[in-house]
Length: 313
Image (cartoon, rainbow, N blue to C red):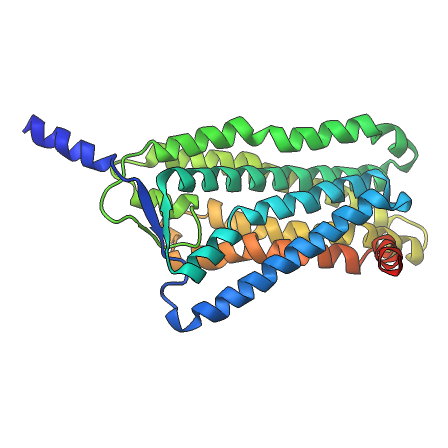
């Protein structure tokens, strides 16, 4: 009996690869989706790369807000590059296998960049808060050293947490099906393949999601409640419109990203459905990074002017 248990336990830990099903349930749409995802990826690279370039080159875009925007655009390129290239390879080659180590690395980087995005959006909300609520102290509060510290913190705070969370998940024994009904190695579909009790891991996921998603979201909402109350006290409608336009783009990005992330990671486990998870994942991993540069550039006169100067050279 002990020998059988030992043998069974050995089998649980011998998985060396998974199968990402992705769009396997839509064979008639695979090449259409390949073309669509490829176009989206190119658009994301070009648009975010252009914003990063002009914020570094144009002297008029050297304020803290554009320093944060440059970092955000670079982050979006990193974020989407953890999932989309693999999705394109899987669709194009029809080989959907991914090694155990590659799956763990993909999840780790995806969580790391996702957590960084939550923190960086919070930093950008704080920048907007200081600019509108304490304009006279803005140059002192948001000096270059502080901006560097805020960005560095956003990129590094989540590293030990996300590495630890990934290690915890992939230390679980896996049995039965190796098929991941998802586009990439995300937490919910991986946990579904694990054997035994995953309660501790699920609680860890909720805890990290609260710390890196819910808390930043509440801080941003708090900042914007104060911002809106200040804007409404401005004497003229013109001043109010200018102040609203300064922060409305960022608020739109916040709602798009945090809304889908909260639904994906903080709703009760009993309400998780594979179809809903897959649709949500496309939203916060592909559509949001594609819309962000459009939201910022089309609603920002300084960015449009810098882009025109770049194109006219």
